[in-house]
Image 1: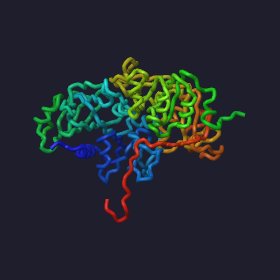
Image 2 (image 1 turned 90 degrees about the vertical axis):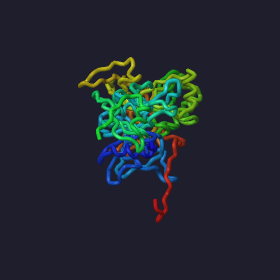
Image 3 (image 1 turned 180 degrees about the vertical axis):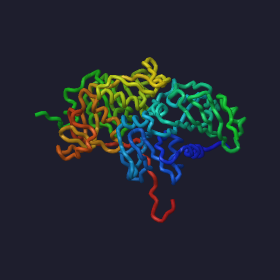
Image 4 (image 1 turned 180 degrees about the horizontal axis):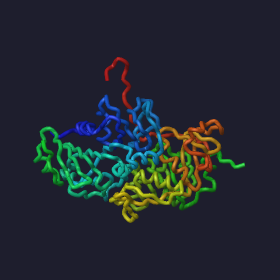
Length: 215
Length: 240
């Protein structure tokens, strides 16, 4: 049984540690916030200029001056702070954010990530993704293992324009979890499989070579 | 005696707009955008604009108004996915587009306002963003050189301001406004509340008045919400 979107978010939440400052991307990464253990203190950064993102407001209490990077209305927490976009990206590019969890279109065996444009189709823009993968200390990508067409997304080499080169540390898909040695030559290691998913099934749907973690 | 306050957006724009100019416009999405100045620029009929702004509004609001009126030739942005007209204009070649990573855009503007002509960053190395740009190694890592950005005019929106041009922003409506205020050859600020000089907390000023040339209290603040997201209220005694 492949993992659901929520299962993938729950698995990504296991990468959180007490005291972490974290930036969550749009889509499945946003769901990670629902899986923060209650005894753990994690501060969410929103790159439009906020630390300490709170939940959605109650009906009738939305504030147009208070949104997240996905332009959704949110709330503040007792320890929240606000700052400019320049300060926000100084945090990101200066290595002050411990973990970034974002979505992906393609990941390569060297840790390259493509997630911001499909040539010939509409180009929406990279937003803060290129800054996040370049500056955040650890980058986790959460995405479906294959495209709707069945084409693999974990590749030897990305075919789409890159968001960053050698930037992905961990990849979580609906089929399993992969460690990527983006700095050295360790390549891709399968460290976990979704329940009932075989190594053969993953190999059949993966272009990149990978080894299997011992145990 | 020098006087920065103006009666309206139209009055603030007098003598500072011309065809072919570059305008920086504050805001993230529709949050913290100078909506009064944008409407007045639309009404002025100025054309051939290069607009530097993180996004380009939505159809019918914010910078989307200038797109609809055909006043923008080129956008410098990080994300434009919320605007259908943008897509049509861009794909038909009627609109030029320069994508900047959001942090690079913010820093280019900050540098422009601070007199720093260029800087090096890791963001975009090995991607199309770095194509044609100088790269350099520092401490074993590769960095790309990005140039500073300035504009003929910066338009910003603050929550409160005084007659000196001191500005205070509110919550996430701050975003790109403080840097843009520093990087315009002329900077116009629209505020929700124009306070008497001396009534703002001097320790809490986000943009000192030196950066602001003209200031006015906006006539209409629609403050549209792009994505209204709420959670249900749980009544007392009900379990979650």
